[in-house]
Length: 395
Length: 241
Image 1 (cartoon, rainbow over the protein chains, first blue to last red):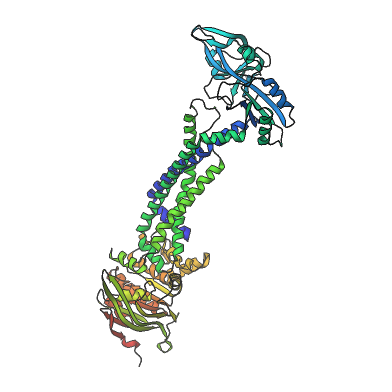
Image 2 (image 1 turned 180 degrees about the vertical axis):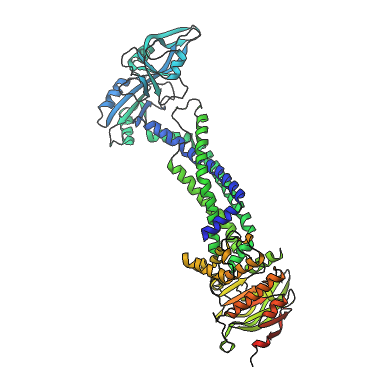
């Protein structure tokens, strides 16, 4: 009977109920987006860092990986030391730099990574094979488009370029053997990778035995934070960043994003709450005589409150899936816009859907629906029966 | 459901020194001034008097939807003038039937569902509840209208549904506030006949009315003026020999 009455009351004013559902759905979509935004980048970054299984990143003292152009000297001995540790499964040394490809209209410049192809964790092969020979190169689509080459072509490239003198240094003829997708590079950033030894040779004697970064994958069961301390003690001239550290630092840098998301999410929830409260207040005021009669014939106050809470909850429950669907569509659209933000890795998502986000949004909505029904219903059910009926009879 | 004889009668309503004041700004306006009377089981009493004489206030106090300023109200042996809200609600549900001038049916529910409302509240479930509602609809002559909503019923039909709703939990006392006030003369006459049938079948009725025909149909007429009872007459056919 409770549900019959609640349902009947909602369908009595179909247009009004439908508009309220739409309004709450928009509010729910905003709420979901904000919940997704508040945790999305962090989770996305975490997943990115762990995607290749490397838990430690070793950078020059006082820097973060690729934050500066600083490099680690005598890196070969560092790599050998790390590989000798029993807890270490794999070490991937990486040297960063630029690659200049001369064209008639000027040189095309791209990022280049010197790495050891068998242990690298910086790219995924899309087509072709890894650059195993010293004169082999793999590149992403942006780079291949810019230089007008495909897998199987050759390209003349240099590690240094003097724009004023139009002079190149460290020139090599390289064979394009693979098309790749770089994990940590921005979507439109031109990128390539060649063997570490080749890049060192192209950059000259100063790059000998240097790397920009060494990534370390630990064996199962090894504690990353403990290993970080061990490596920093063994090699004081480096900074070791664990995934936990990196996420913490990302958290700090993104704190304003989260604050923004929390504030906007709270506003969305408040708008939905006020919308349903207004609707329920109007609806209850229209039925104030009916409610007084229900009380007069012996319907308990709690039952009346429950009926109106069910009505409010029903609006929320119908609006929630609509809102969640709308939220996912808008999140996808907003993500595609924000993904063009300069310098962000292609794989970073601002709005990451997680079931927990949906449940959180749904839980908050249902809770606000219950609260929005309680106030007007309790107020109306608490009015004196006799004076209310007298007012209704006169009015 | 047969009417008890007056020899078996015992008070179903006992009102003693009942007063009800309403604060109006700085003033206190007395609506009832020390009213006392009893209503026996099986009686059919009409309370009449000019507007503002306190008859609706008296009915509200009998119906436990208002509290007296002083005095006592005992219904079916239970003091009801100072019940908690929860106890008063339960008392109304099980012991009192209300019929209002404006019917006050739930517009969103059908005729049958309106009758089921107090039955559901009293804990009757499923088929038993539906059967009871149908029996009551048949009693008031609306068995073919059970699926109609109030907006699809005439005024007289709505009042019949309201009466069936009031009878749902077999109340000890049926209270009616101007039950013919919104009805035309012909439908009003049908309603009067229905009340007489209800009383003949054993229902104790107290009705507040301006309708002389309805008052004449009652076995007892209580006249009120300025918050007091000025006369209390029993119809000749009901007077003890």
